[in-house]
Structures are given as structure tokens and as C-alpha cells.
Image: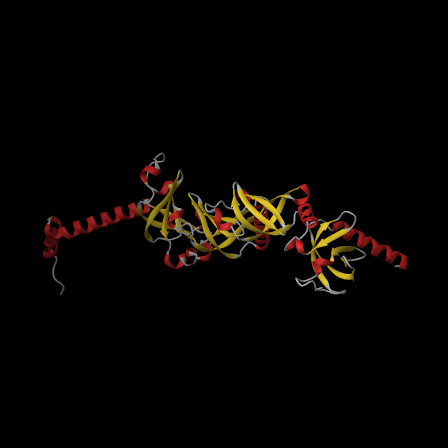
Length: 389
């Protein structure tokens, strides 16, 4: 690449970087010169910005920086060149700085002097400002005096009469901070992450968990435990601190799905050790469908009794025959712990019991036979049979 091409590339890169710098943006630069009133700051390439020297001095009026030092500042204007400010983050001192902060939507520091009708009187540097009561906090409070004497960051939302008429908002900054914190939290979350939150509300379908930064995720009732949960309030209460797992993230809808049972032992992992085909078990009906009834054999392990295995007629109302919570005796016909499927039968249990009853009856009948005609006939035949020699 020739020297001319290199110069063009450098200039092009600098111009592109300058275009990307916007008002309100925080940038880092190097001080290249300090004059009586302003200092020049290199912000990359051939781009330079100015900053008032007074902002580079401490409270005693001494310079805190020197040529070559790097500083962090905010862009307060891009018209006719870049203008920076460090004080706007902390305390605006002049009307011009207040106006710059207003146009750049940057925070200024103010002290709440007293509560007045409809809001608060706020002192910002040597200026008086008004903060409506709805703009002093993100949540409504019942004690206006609690803000008096406090020093907060505010955003100027109205700038009139050269700065003599100012209206400010603290709520705007709080909401901006919350949105920024929420965005940071969402970016940090990944599927599979284990996070701790607090139960914000409980509904019929689950609970909303506050994860921080005003970000909430839904813990659905189906994810609260391996056993079927019918009432979420039996598992969690508002205010409870809870550890959950991130199951799904929907960035478009900003929805977060959480799970609790994933942090508990999976009952299916040991179901093959406690259950077997042909085993007769007692279980509890958890739900009923047109095709059969679901029975919980162990906490978190459910099996299906198909309609054909209930022993009832085809068009029987299963919900009336097997109310939720009914305890049943079933036999395991099929068991697949990998697919998490168990096929059960009530009919087989009934048939087995009937067969047992028949056997018991037959045994009782045989036991009584010696006192009847059959026993006498046997004795008679024995008497006629010659003894062995």
C-alpha cells in the first residue's frame, strides 16, 4: 500500500469513527493541549474534542490532569465539533452546562430542598428547579418528607428562560437505570444457568420470580416438582427466595422460563429399581382423559391406565368413575424408564383377584371332600384293594 493510500485509509477510518460518536455517548480520550479556558482531547484517529479547563480542576482550582493523560467524559454536543464534559455526571455549575445537559439528556446532581405543592424544590448548583411529585421516584410513596435533604441525580426535562425555569425528573433516570440493568441481566442469562431470585407473585398457572433489575421469569406449575402440582401456593409464597434453572429464553418476547424440579433428583432415574413388569402397585389418580386415567405410582412417576384396561364399558365417563385423588390398585403391564412411560391395568388386578377367589374356593371345596361321598368311595376302594405282599 502506498503512502497516499495509507493516509487515505487513516483519514477514512477517523471520519467513520467521528460519525459514530453521538451526543450523550461516554468516550475516552487523551489530553493533547491545555489552554486558558479549554483543553483539546484526542478521541481517536484525527478526531479532537474540547472540554472546559474548569472541569479538569479540583475544588481548590488546581489542575488534576496534564498533557498525555487519558480521561473519561461525556459528549454534550456534536454541533461544530465535539464538546465533552466530566462535571455533568456529577454537578453542573453554569447555565450553559445545564443547557448542554438538557439537550444531551445527561444527568445533573441536585439537592431536594423541601416539599412544595405538587412536588419538590430542587437546588442544582446555583439554580432552583421543580420536580413533580410523580417524577421523584419510580414508586409512589406516602411520605413526601422522606426525600427532603437528599442529593440525587436528575434529568432536566424542561429548560426555559435561560435556565431560570427548570423542571427535572429523577424517575426518568431510575427507569433508564432499570432498563439498562435489565438488558445487562438478560444478556448475561443463558439456558441452563442456575440463578437465585425472589417470588414476586403467585398465580394459578405458576409464579413470577424477580431475578433482579426488574427482570422476571415464569416458573410454571409443571416445572415446580416431579409430582403434579395443582396449587402453586403450596410450593412457593410471595417473598420467598428461591434457586431455579433457566430453561428457555425468548429474546423477541422478552420471556424467561424457569424450572425448579430440574434441581431435584429425577425419580425416573431409580424407577427401574423399584418398579417391575407384573408388579401390583397402589397409586393415586392425578388426571383423567378420554383415553384413560393417569396414576402416580411414586412421587413424579406416572403411568397410564388405558380405557381398555379399566374394565369399564367403552363410553363410560372416566372422570366420574375415577375422581382426581382416588387410590387404585394396578398392575404394571409395560415399563420404559427411558421413554418415561408405564402402561397399567386395573382389569388385570380384578381378573387376578377373581382367579385367586376361584382357587381359594376350589381349595376349600377339596378340603371338605373327605367328609362326603367321594371320601367314602375312596375308603371303599381301598378296602377292596388287596394289600401288598
